[in-house]
Image 1 (tube, rainbow, N blue to C red):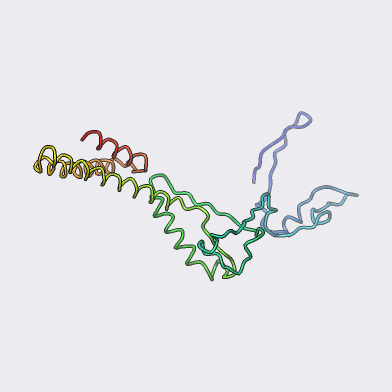
Image 2: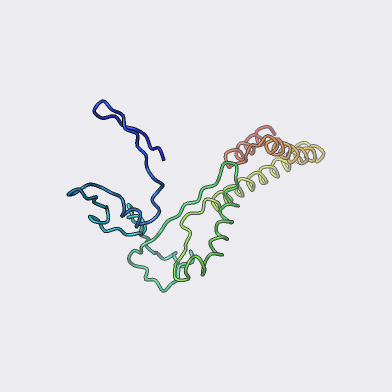
Length: 204
């Protein structure tokens, strides 16, 4: 296949190469020079092995008192460090971090004992899905407390009729806001949720 060109001695040479190398035999058959009129192959000057890439980084994991809560077998001593492989999963824009994390954990659990050998320990070091869920639940809890507080104060100060109006207006307003966000393709994150709570508290 054509692979480019280069100029030398006021001449232009077209470079034509073969297909991609598929195995060590084809790599070893690459001519790297000429000696005594005979071609010198790569296999003549180098030892070729088909294996994984040489690692550029090493990861070690230490175990502490909380390791058993993360599913690590207690047979491993809690002192020292162990070789590890880290994997990071990130969600696409607009995806739910909690759902992505839960589905990934289920997939890993299904692979244990099969694709993942039974003697390999798998542990989750960070789960931002749980963090997002916890923060969202906390914000919703604050919204509920703030709404109930305002309804009770209005009922005591102005009467139950006005309190009922507020009790209906708050969820209707939030529902319409979330519906519009959904229709326009906007995602609801912690910042947006906090802004909604802050806005509703001050508009009341």
